[in-house]
Image (cartoon, rainbow, N blue to C red; front, side):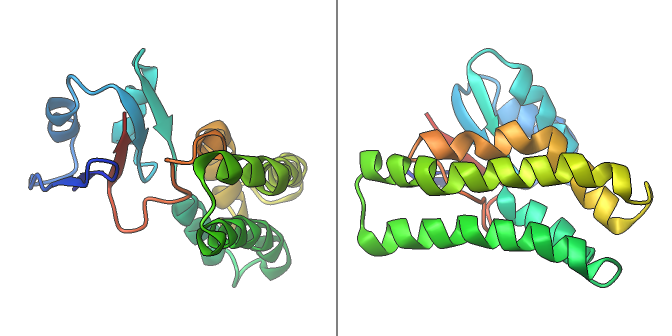
Length: 170
């Protein structure tokens, strides 16, 4: 499913499998922000000149949730940071802030949280077993951190894809 929330457009494109062919065809002329679930098929779009690839915090959260049973202390650190990001988005929505105000709140409150989480992951990855679930969550998140932070500077962008496969914002 592809969605453009500004234009209130939704496109369902059923394909067998999750190969590159479908997204490549659908997005051949696309320009703008593309938010995805982090599946590797979409990485190619981040290399295109007129596309900004954004990743989804819900998928990051799921990785750390999966690590709770095996490493609750470390997983909880990451999940606490992520919950703070969700809290800021709830605040923005509840206060019905305009775009400028939303971006300002994100920069004041969410940017330091993402920076602290990135620092914690960079330090922690050297302290965990490489094949552990917590290492997997960190290894999944760190290369995507810049694409995860993109939403901070544009109020049209969202923290997560929620149930969407992709979010387009031109």
